[in-house]
Length: 250
Ligand code: NAD
Image 1 (cartoon, rainbow, N blue to C red):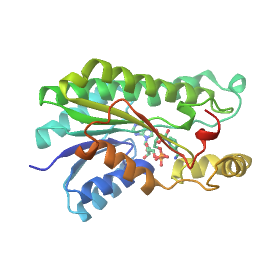
Image 2 (cartoon, rainbow, N blue to C red; image 1 turned 135 degrees about the vertical axis):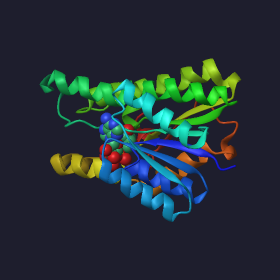
Image 3 (tube, rainbow, N blue to C red; image 1 turned 90 degrees about the vertical axis):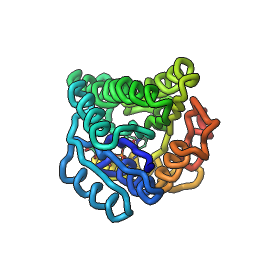
């Protein structure tokens, strides 16, 4: 029987690239995104790659919408094997003391609450069915401190805690939970952030030992590996994929 994966933030960037690579391995995908147009585009790409897909529109910050994407997936295929818990926003950047409290709340709601809600309801289904694999999206800013992204960094450090603690509680139930910590990667999110903060792009490239940004496809390769059975004894890891960036700082 085909495996089934849920990907949040699947309408763009890392989520879309991973949807395509999993589909190429025959995995059926629940494409979850707040953006309908991007979501529909990913469904088409998954179908082209030879797998089934459904689109479930959801704001991951809203508990009822999280429960709904889990239910829709189970109604469609009866199982969840893989979960790429990935939807997130960067916020507008800038110094923390200049940040609007509403923006702080929004970033926490989407990046952290959205990820916690997702794991809460997906893991329940996985464990009932004997187990599954989860990859949570952290960031370089989740393993080191960085200026201009204090709230974002706080949420991405939270993702690391979620990942490690879930393993402590549920590895014995067949759950594998890992996190990825990408450095700056050329997705629409980063392109728009760097357009708004051009100096950041220059300094980002200079600060990366490999002197370039990552690509969504490179990150998707890692996520696909971590989700599938080839990584069966890897659990609770935070895997950095950043051209050596945090290696020079941590
Ligand atoms: P992206 O903007 O290309 O894609 C993010 C997707 O998430 C979009 O389709 C967007 O519509 C969706 N989304 C946003 N808010 C949502 C919500 N409330 N509910 C449901 N969907 C929502 O960005 P990306 O670069 O692919 O980012 C994916 C993840 O990777 C994020 O968690 C981001 O923090 C993380 N990340 C990205 C980079 C990078 O350099 N691109 C580096 C480290 C971590």
